[in-house]
Length: 466
Ligand code: GLC
Image 1: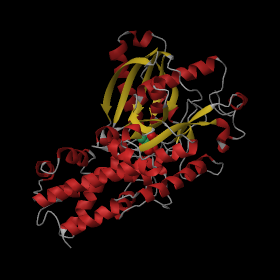
Image 2 (image 1 turned 90 degrees about the vertical axis):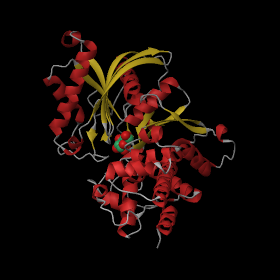
Image 3 (image 1 turned 90 degrees about the horizontal axis):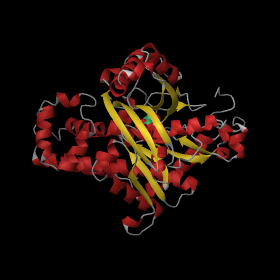
Image 4 (image 1 turned 30 degrees about the vertical axis):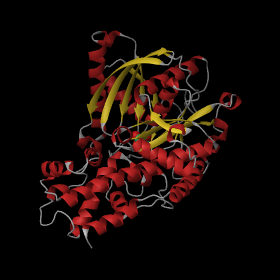
């Protein structure tokens, strides 16, 4: 077999046909429903305890932190009403060993960063002032019986810290904050997708869902309380009477963990088996930023083992797991084939031929296209489930923002599923760039929660303490 033959085979394997997209979407709809049922399913479908649509008139000053996959962000947000806001944010990179380190190190790191931020942005007023309300964006599956708690179901995106799964993370963070006497109180815990949904709806009423295509992938949308069978018997009367909406954090990175429809390749299987949590997040492991560079690396190692590429070269640096993050395939696609030469020499001391460079470039195109096409199955499934015929899908995350052509490819795949067959600029359902979910979204949610509490409305199940 030649390198070109091997590439053609990979091309077939990574191709997702319109028929396959439709098959996946239909299965996805039934899995979303299963997740809301009393027995539950693979997709957690977590009620996020946001039971109002923002009007755009919310006001107030809030703090927010976002523990994502790569960075910790601390944000000071002022909601000004009229869909307007201002904010100041700082990023603190999460040290890589911390992803698999000790629980207390993580909470200390967050509390220290927060303390630094408060001192910098509030100065000496810090310790004497009333406690600042903080929205905590915790972008992992966390079960919630109320807005101010979150019990981590399991780590995702390569995190693996002992002693946190099964725990309510809010007191873990609050204790670390209290030790430092930082004047901050955690008032709400939200997922990044829920934040994205609410922040975008604060600014754009046509928003129908909030989506993250970043280190991980996930979506949130508004359902209706009475249509959530697993909450039956647990909902306070006011929510039922008012026919309240309820934001749902789908956690659909876990879609198809029993592998019924996804066109997984041997590379996807290997990524899963070598991950800290095999058998979980099958969908996410095929499309999210944490894994796209790894897919490319495994394909290249496979070709190398068949003596088809990098012949007679020492490729040790490339044999290190996750040696290429998603910026590799994304930059290669952006800069075209000749860029591969310098990149592989500088990063791995590997020389490439022109044919190799072309094939590596084309592989990046295939990996990105597969990611975008599979990504829209979650969107299409939510639209089918809620019968949305038009609207804006507020999207954020490094893959959406940086992987070339993601949006166009996603739109094309949506058209494959819904068969609009009109000019792309007239597609009724579109992906648009989201407002800052972890900052603005967390602030709007904190504000909506305060309002509910003042009005004596429920913000959790009947068993919750709020
Ligand atoms: C992972 C997390 C989820 C998050 C998503 C995007 O799927 O489990 O909570 O929303 O990544 O960051």
